[in-house]
Image (cartoon, rainbow, N blue to C red; front, top):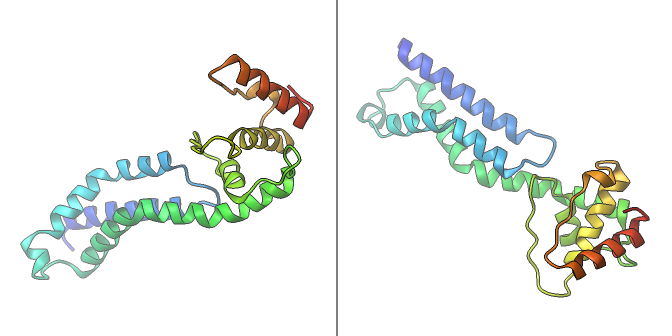
Length: 182
């Protein structure tokens, strides 16, 4: 293999390793972290795509190992976001069950699978969208209960924001009633 190709092959191998290492993570992979991995590999990906469209590549006059690594790397990058989603969903079922065993019941009811998943999905930010009366506030109370019960946070480390004074008052009352803590 030419020296230039060997250097590029080493960059491909490092990229493949970065993708595999992220997907081998034992916990939930934050989509922001997944995007950062892809962003770090952007330059190598562009070069790999360019080489895979070259004439020598098309007619097969490229080192076999380099060609396999280019194809593996491009496929890994192309499927990475979907692989992260699959990884997270696989972990989430068991994590949601564990959360349920830890905090149920919340306000006298066991949370459903979607509510438990929203709590177990431990990433930087969460967006819960649901209609009126579907249990969004109960899910928030369950999250606070989970954070306090597991020791993942102390009361002074938790910030909840709401749009009206009435909802703030109600949320405070419900959290105190459920957890015994402010």
